[in-house]
Image 1 (cartoon, helix red, strand yellow):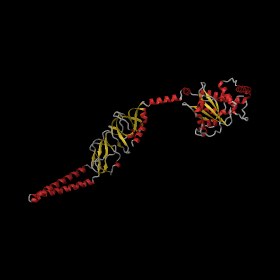
Image 2 (cartoon, rainbow, N blue to C red):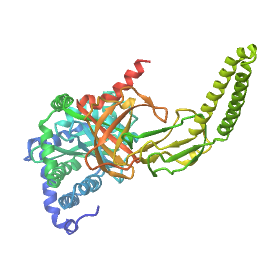
Image 3 (cartoon, rainbow, N blue to C red):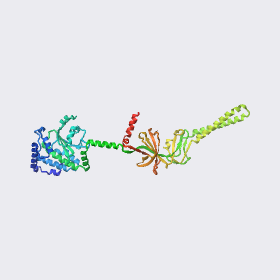
Image 4 (cartoon, one colour):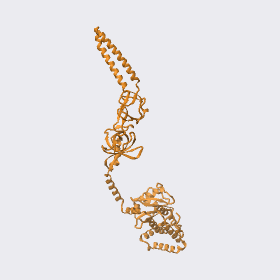
Length: 508
């Protein structure tokens, strides 16, 4: 991000006397321990300026006037940011104008505790699974380190040394010297933190300006926070992880017993409520169907014709056999009056004549059944003519139905795995395939208590529902029905399927 116009108009030469004087006073007070800044900042600066820092002789800081000018430029840039995203970018990228470092990361706290890496310098998006971010995440999450960070104090660290002391499984850091600069709100809350890394040891002169710059960043951050987010952040400071976990656990236990209406979805079809069944009266082959599917037929109308060639031949043969038996019988009757032997054949001839008549009547009855007539008036319901023409059927096989379009119901095929406790009078909502956004309501009328195989070889319970007043749909339409049961606890609503799966697995 480029500097703001106000920052670019700062005249470094005019600031030189003031900058030199301020930096000299700050450095002198740091060495003598008589600083006039707040005690916490004096303590941090004194610690960072200790001889143990081992500042290399070749490491030189920028001239005081130039450093002060950069500080003012960065502070103006931070206060002119329009949103938090812009400020985050400025914190990790623009800060190196004041103190040269190799790379930096912006670390933000999470509500449940701990820290997360949100931004990295010089890149628009960082990979949290890269070796360096993963190593820093381990460093941040260590228990000994968490207490130090929660205090909200700036600290200087050697990452290699602390990783070795804490037993972290990390590779050596290419930039081991780090400084942790917290960005705080006015009430002391930790809003974020800047983690800056470099190969060389940090100079006290750089840190003396980074500390107040972090305060400016925190002030700008707090100003850009949304009101609701600010309230949540404040609440997070008063809620510990243990209290939050306890509260969520109690809420989950209480919510588990909240009653909810249970319901399931199942395929359904609109069928005739009291259909007239058309079944095969004889064993034979269907020769013709005289009415198309969905046609209105009147009672006693011929609707199906069987192939009757064999039936007619059988009737003709039976008729001839009956004539032969009749003639033989009369011959025996006439001869019986003159011959005692013929009197003995009279009973046999009479029996043969009766058998021939019975076969003739049977053949005639079979031929009369070669045509099926409608048992009632209504719509003829079956799949298609091509499915039945030329097909051999057996006696009693179901061929089609005759239904009343004004007397329809919903047939629901409820899979056994989705079976719930249902009762007559329960509510049903039907969503037709042709109009899936509109629900057609109905009421359960009867339920089959034994499952039966569906066309897909799946065991289902068949549930029948009547339409509510004025919502009868066309017979044959299909859709998805939502069948509602009673009230159940939330835990049962959520765990019903897993428990059923476990029960079936254990019962094997």
